[in-house]
View 1 (spheres, rainbow, N blue to C red):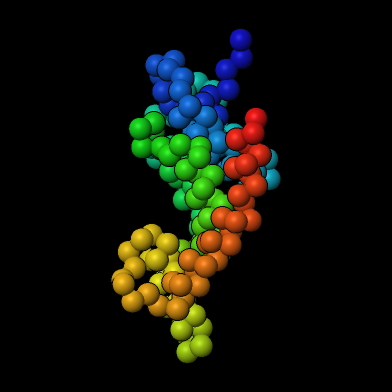
View 2: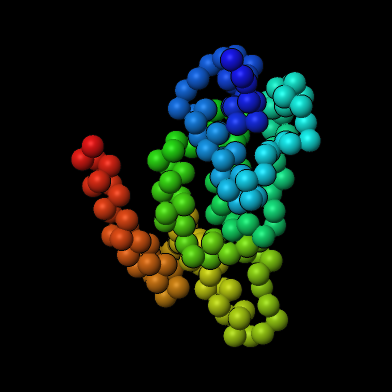
Length: 169
């Protein structure tokens, strides 16, 4: 039997324990491969070294700063060393499907500020949309936050066929 530790969760290698959370870890590595032109993660290391170091949370493939924020967040949460801290696949899928458009841009939101007054207003509106999507909005929501909620409702409607199709199986 061949062993490819690059895609295996730490608990599979160390304890031979397999749960659905292992698939979540493997999904993160696969997602990394997709956004890195099918490069092999940890290619410069041998299988033996990967098996020894995979439980170290800092031993993960490098994240390109050009990746969309949502993709980086999903990867980081899905490849956590502790399986109890990983999301379910459904949670990861929801996060990818319903993330605010601002999170589809590369780099952290704080980096995407500009000096022009017009763009500063847009950045502030984007920040309030992100806060609203996290559920920390006030009772008097800004128009940007309301637009974000309307946009999320449209995405839910657009993607509702996915739920129906998968529940019919």
